[in-house]
Amino acid sequence: MRTREEAPEELPATAAPPRRSARRRITRLVRAPFGDVPGPLPAHRLDTGLDERVTPDQERGMRAFWWDGFWANSSETIVLNYTALYLLAFGASNAQVGLLAALSSLSAALAFVPGARVAERFGRRKTTVLVTGGGIARVAMLMLAVVPFFTGGNPAIWTVIALVSFRGFWGYFAVPAWTSLTADIVPLGIRGRFLASRNFGMGISALATAPLAGYLIDRFSGLHGWQLVWVLTFVVGALSTWAYSAIPEPAPHPHVAELERDPDQPGFLRDVLSDGNFVAYLVSVAVWNVALMAAGPFFNVYLVENLHASTAMVGFINAIISMTGLVGVIYFGRMMDRRGTKWVMVVSGLLIPLLPAAWLLVTAPWQVIFINLFGGVIWAGYTLALMNMVMVMAPPGKRARYAAAFQTVTFAAAFAGPLLGGYMIDAIGFKAVFAFSAAGRLASTLILIRFVEQEPEHRAPVPEGAAEAAM
Image (cartoon, rainbow, N blue to C red; front, side, top):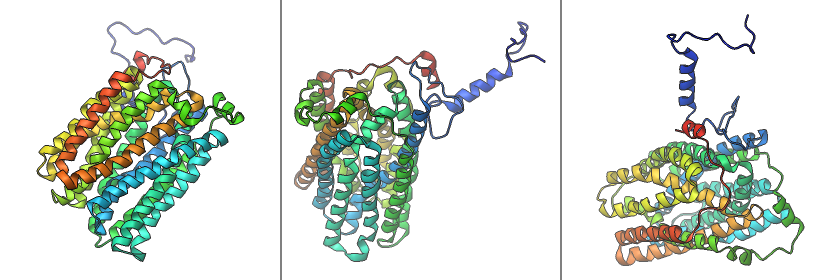
């Protein structure tokens, strides 16, 4: 019997290749494109092909983080696609739909600075996320299901707006702590591919959730379908909270510990404004979000009111974005590790303005399918880069405050966008707003290209073998 250490006998030159090589090729195909990063299931062997190794705690944390994203996006998909239509079910006007989006953004913008201070001063990042975004915000969504039991008409509209705004505050209060902890859980060298893997799972969950919610709303008469959907939103949100609770929280970065010990740090605003590169990025973000949110809350409204699409049709159309987004995260995740975050943002940011411009030509709901087939791929890249840009631009000990500054600007602009969009729709119509949104998104990308430098954090190159495995 040959021992394991002995070399196998040399095969004749004419011998066929070992069958094991074929199995390896099949295994590589099955594992691609995310087989070299931690995923939803435990791996017997994890070889990232990089100098920095993934520790057992990091692997366990990334696996729990993957499932957190899967369940959280199921909940978020319903909120994003159906909250405005829920208002319409109570008889809301376009102005009230715009106000819903604006107040949700304002409440979120007000949450980031106190959320960052809590994350920096107390350091209990996971607990902060679980109590606020994973606890209070989830309960607020459950309360949407009971609104029809107590009120209707205009009072119900204002109650829904208040609950969604309350949910927005506590949900985004957790974001600075979430961002800081994410950067410690996921090593930089595999961050692009891991976040792509996580976004892939999130896309699958959205692909299932959006049409299911639309079907339930259409299947049950009156508001009963809506109530069932909000209960479903709470349940999948609770599963996200359970998954996040399994993440092992690593020790804070030394700079974070120093911040906790020294209360006499530079002021929040002065500290962020001293970084000219990041300020330029915030200007780009502000322009982008004003343009995005001027039109964003009204696409589904336009589908229902002007193109006479059913709620189920809206769910199906939005599910297409998630479906084609699965392709986008595979490509852009690999490219982000190889070319950098800014490259992904620029490429996707130059193409996204074509989407609202295409709405100018839409005359029937089925035509939006083609817009979303393309949009899902491009938005997957932009969302992936947006998640990582702050992590790589911020100093390690200041990630929470940089994340808070980014999110505050994002949602302050998102507060102004729907108010501007609602006013423009009443004055000059939907299509003028779609054109304005396309121009604004393009302007934001040009600012990014001209004034924002490539992320300063060192990026280890991805070896060719790892890149091939991701194909």
